[in-house]
Length: 298
Image (tube, rainbow, N blue to C red):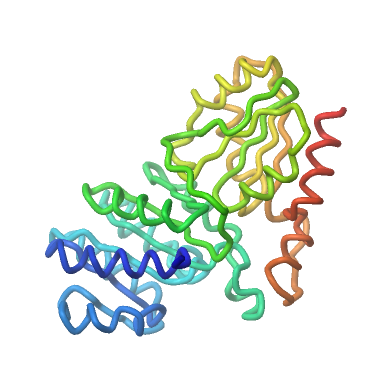
């Protein structure tokens, strides 16, 4: 099976061959993999080199010219380095485009902190009217990309090296388990770990690969069905990124919330591998189980 990144690149090449109104802008990352598409469509496969602010602005320029741009690089360069251009060139001008990152929060730990971006979704969340997809499986990534290309809205598609065993292609929150002891929300590639962590617990498990717009109705219904509004939110980026959306969804329901994700209280400066970082942030299955049980038991 192709990885999430390989699936994105193969699907993008198919889109470029089929739709003359789609262009992709690169900053060296993935340029080699799309060399064939660049030879066939030299005017719609644009590599600006390691100039990430220009990467985003070029995408916005293509949108102004009537094309549907796909803008792609690692999240630390696409969202963090290029945030002013995202804010002004896309959002302020109300232009549409599909921003696609690969690398998630710490998928490349041997590259160091420069290639880590746990705050990317929080940054995008500070701008209005963005759709945010966080697929947990290559087939979800493919489907979400295909759904994102038509239209003129603003989309952020966050790809990761971490994947779940099976895709779940529903809209909004998909209820994978039902229980009476609380609601656990899993976003994207943390799902399999959440399922292992909640095995044997009497809880409802919700899953989302699209986290913006936030499925407030789905969360509210699950909390009311469970008979308790104790919510554990597990996200593969900064802990608590979606906490205000949970609060809005349950604004008239007494509730408690435990937010789990990449730690905010310290910067993890080790290298190691992905599993080391999962453990350091408490996002491995064992740590998640302890956190969830402790919260629901109090």
